[in-house]
Length: 94
Image (cartoon, one colour):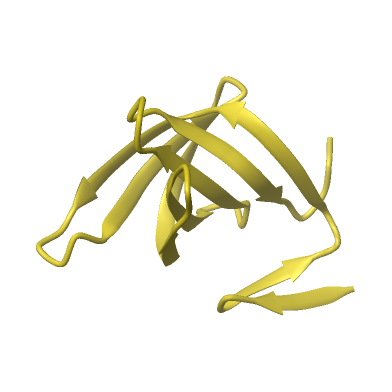
């Protein structure tokens, strides 16, 4: 089953999480975040696309797609300035 969500084509392999993650990014003139790499569960994911972004009570949420097709919903905390992965979509689970 495929789902279109916020411009991302997703499949049924989604996990809802709340785990720490390391993110390499930049902030452009408009204030948008551009994600370049994600390190999650000791794996490095180079990012090919940064998607929709929005503000939540806890911080800034960002969608990102890695080169292998893995998609992440990330949250940058306003208080701690640390990143957390909230959701992950993968083509399969190992």
